Length: 361
Image 1 (cartoon, one colour):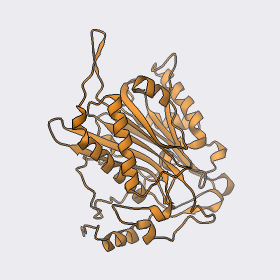
Image 2 (cartoon, helix red, strand yellow; image 1 turned 180 degrees about the vertical axis):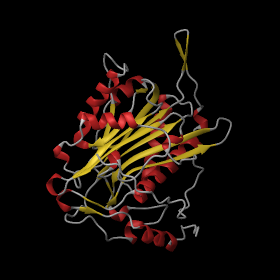
Image 3 (tube, one colour; image 1 turned 45 degrees about the horizontal axis):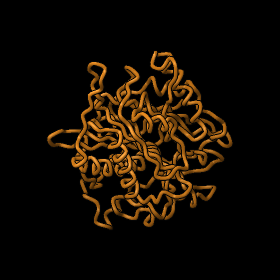
Image 4 (spheres, one colour; image 1 turned 120 degrees about the horizontal axis):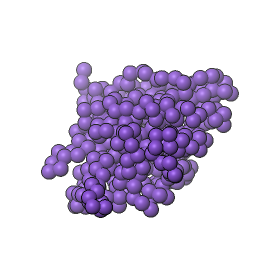
């Protein structure tokens, strides 16, 4: 097991003019009680190179099997997110959301069942939510290196506070538009009659180089080199998992509307949701209904009040993806394949060229 602790250059501090007001952490953990845990696996070289991991997201922490209102949306379904049939049926999400690689979904799902049973969460049955993206360019994905214990560790170590981004957890071996990708997060705080927070976490592994766009700047066309080495991946599609969390009181059908808006933030970075891409999004609210006299008492914002949340979701999704790119570092993995990090200096030069950089010294 490997703990990735490289400091992340903050794109905001570098002058990227993101719109909107962030929470204090600019992370999904700006929602009170929400916890994130990573296990990062980096070992070996050549045919046995391991570059993968697991990420756990607890909507309300590990203190119990909380059920929160939830909904999901598939922009393009060449991917997997387990447990979604029951989310459709019940309108709720129980337990953590797990992220890993494509061929480790099964072991991670089973681990969540065992972990929950050991804590009295679900003695009879459970339908865990586990989502994936493919890391087989850098990782020996068919070596099945993610184990039950790795999932247990991600669950046990999940915590609030700052979220490590880039080459960590389920995002360890991921690629974005030919640059190193991975885990990214961002948040937005809305002031008004009912102040609330929207947080987004992504496992980013999508896109073609020529399409990569950062805050309206065609960075992919400005930096056409530094492509993955040893094998051409120019035609790869990849995938992205997006988790949208809010403490605004919303009903499941409203959360589905919120999940759909994540697609607009993804599109701002240049994605066209390729045929081979698994672009699957989940939204939940930590504002759970109160129970009195055997009845659930729901509160919800009126639909006419949702526009600020839609905007916050779009903005935070775009920023989370960019944060993943800026946090990730160059990685060499399976068979000596190398994926380069987004070159920060050249990216800032491109932003300046198009008048999209607010220099801050």
